[in-house]
Image (cartoon, rainbow, N blue to C red; front, side, top):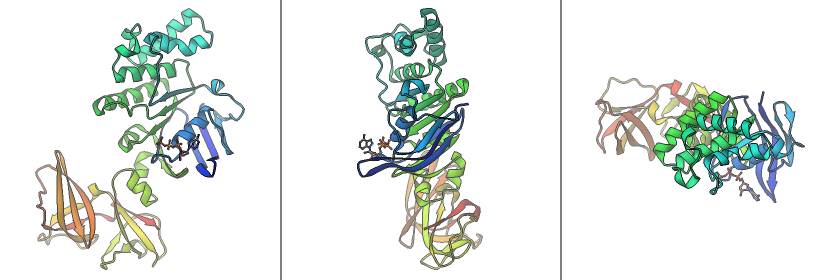
Amino acid sequence: MAEVVVDKVSRSFGSHKALDDVSIAFPDKGFYGLLGPSGSGKTTLLRMIAGFDFPDAGRIAIGGEGVERVPVEKRRIGMVFQTYALFPNMSVAQNVAFGLSVRGETKAAIEVEVKRALDLVQLGQLGERRPHQLSGGQRQRVALARAIVTKPRVLLLDEPLSALDKALRVDMQIELKRIQREIGITTIFVTHDQEEALTMSDRIGILRDGRLVQEGPPEEIYDRPESEFAATFLGDANILRGVATGNGIRLPDGTVVSANHGTKPAVGTTASCAVRPERISIYDADDASRGEKNRLKGRVSKRIFAGNSSTYFVEHRGDIIKVHVQNNGGVKLAEGQSVILRWSPGSAVLIDR
Ligand code: ATP
């Protein structure tokens, strides 16, 4: 078992708290996506799990054992960073073999393990090449092979794909996930890219200013954000602000919108309601057949066409509400047109402010 447990960990640099009382259990063999704005503490947390840095307070355990006194090389951790410096004067195979040679393994054993690792990343044929003879994606695979060849218990990935272009990046996301499943390794993946985190992770944790804002399975965080920050950081969200009515909020214009999920802010206090743009239906205002609940009137201020979908920016009493619509030949509304927006209370989340 290689569950990684970070328990009430804090770390300051001078007066700046890079991590503030962070607790996360990274499941054994799971793929955990760590997200957060620049400077939120993601790398600091990885460095402490790896053993390059130490908490001021709190504990870190791997496989049930505290690692405070375990040096980097004994923690059995593989790492791939954005700048995955390969040794330029060594062949691909020699690069991958490096960790095993340092460990003093026999030549025969090294050959077997290097071949296995290169086959896993589908570079079995390129062992003799030098790094400069490889594409960016291939180099990234060598870095991954080098990280897993020593059979680590935990794999730490710090934005390993961010230097790749979009198409290659999507290929590598699929590859990385396949390899991770195949070897069943506890993986912690830092990324800036929310879509990447959503598609790849079994669980996601969002850090902000050194604090854990929310964590859980991707769908749970997406469908039930607990703060405006989580709602807008992971995916796109409309945030409507008003006064809590019990199971909804009253907007400044008097309209009441209800939500079936989230907290129950005390009646009369300020609260928000978060709705995803794809959960909102948009109709021509002349269409009178629509119900009265969760209904806002507005005017299309802009429509952005994006091939298979369009985004409408609808002005409602000075606020802009975004609506995503699939372009399947249905809705097509012009800029300036009066519209009605509706959504089900089951698609909205109440947030305490
Ligand atoms: P990014 O996404 O930009 O890589 P991050 O979430 O990984 O950011 P960290 O690198 O963990 O953020 O940094 C968290 C905070 O701690 C930042 O404000 C950073 O400036 C500060 N910090 C990190 N390492 C040090 C250090 N060695 N000395 C001083 N401050 C540091």
